[in-house]
Image (cartoon, rainbow, N blue to C red; front, top):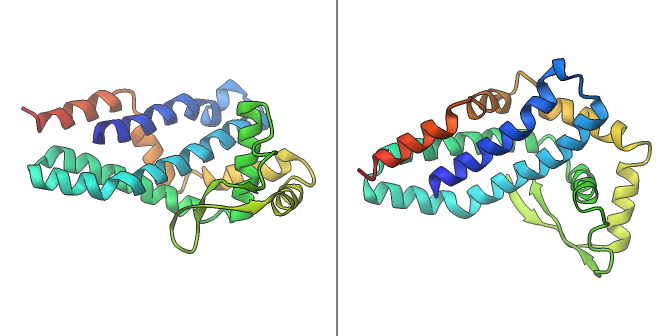
Length: 195
């Protein structure tokens, strides 16, 4: 499970990283913004997975004496902390705007249009963890209208640039997790404890 937690995010990073950061590909900023909307939601999912599994896995690895797997788990914890730092810079209303846009481009439909309450998992800046929102249709669409009022790219562009800035701790983790042999290295280290 530790290997899966780490390699899932590594594969996710590898799938999208080059499209956002490789300037030789000449990907337009509008496309980068759309990729970022998917990326942002994946980052929240990674934090949510850590919240559900980290302490349980930490205890189990310690109880079994899995030193190699523990080192991998600490590395994953470091990644999640760097994601949280970036997420704290995006207010909750902007998060809703990003998530709604991601759902629209991925699913091709408006999410929860028939529900009385709209529920999304967002990052709670004050408590440094994820939480579920529960907004009425009127509240939700007022927020979305305010976030998207000019254009989606004017909304997403500055958030993307700030979130993925090269001087961040998260960006350094991206370099590590996107290395060519990272997944096989993690697997090799993790399985040492089973020998």
